[in-house]
Length: 502
Image 1 (cartoon, rainbow, N blue to C red):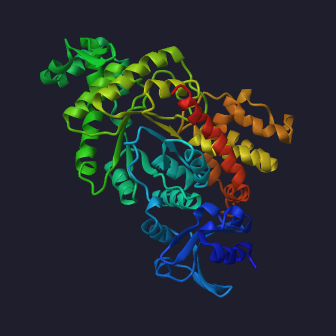
Image 2: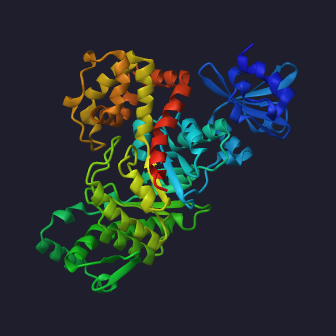
Image 3: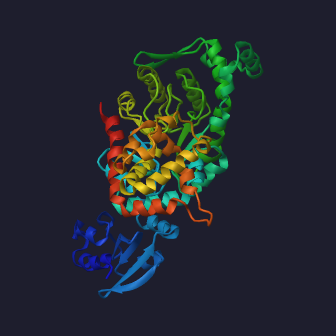
């Protein structure tokens, strides 16, 4: 008999008090729920997870699957399909996403493979913090070959597996068009991160004063000038913001179209949507750092246009490159971040820190200056922990992936900016198997593996079979506890750093 089926008798005899020993039978203990006269839980059979409904009840009609008799009891075994996930969210509302940015601390935990959320949940359970478990951009979906329904379903199944009832969000991340926003909302997403980068004019920063004056004369609005020039705005705690004429012109030319775009999306789609939606405005995916004056201008103009955002993501000074620590002057970041936080407090939203993976040197600043009221986004670092597990458990597979990543790096750089130098990465033939996981502790190799994830996952052989994808999923499913433990430890470093001075 398949092991999880042996657990049916124990569950029938002891119900919810059966204890964690059923885990040794292939049942996920924290998933065990009782509803409508049935026990419902998640099991693992081989590399496949299945939903089990034990004891016939109306639930048998809600989920599709196969009915069988186990020790005289009717049991329905169901696949983790989208249709069954829709039913799951109806029967167990805690598996459906909610608006979470109203809570002081929130963290985006992007899961590019759909396997990481249980590890994230095991960590988050220990903190007063709300997770965004489903967090993907259109770029990430295209690179991983997934879609918004699949991403949200994976999060919901993980929440059920871990019995997590603390509430989680789902973020349609870095969306750039009305169609993308509508698509994510229709899939049930509770947060929209609007990427305004294509409406921010980065050329202004390179224009001469004469060119700025000419462009501004075509745009000039005295009613806008009168709100800012010659005035000082007191943000509290002796923090003020003021504008000089030259800087103001550049700010107006740089951000006005982005403000109009955000206002249009908000009023046409978000404001009167049928459920509560966390609206985040991203102005960080640009070459232009957001000065405190620019941040204040954007925030004030959005307020005047009656746009209600839960959070704003500025482009901070320094560099927030993928998968490595902050690059820049930490003291200057601290100095400017105090003002950015004061602006967010002044207008009533949270500050958002994007590309937050592994930015350990500035996390204490973020936690302290916001007084524990922030949103931080991570994503690719969870993929890197998967790569670390692969390097540990199957060095041969890792060596193949590493070599492939180097061969396609130039293609990956079309999507991501990094400063990695492949000349700093030790040759694989010079490394013993036990040294391979250590490559995930070095910036250059981390970044190469970080940004090539899509090309790795989508690579195929001449016969159409995936080159790596299936082997990656199989290995991580076999060693899922090792992956969960790695995530618990690594994301735990993020959270502890954020909490270190509170």
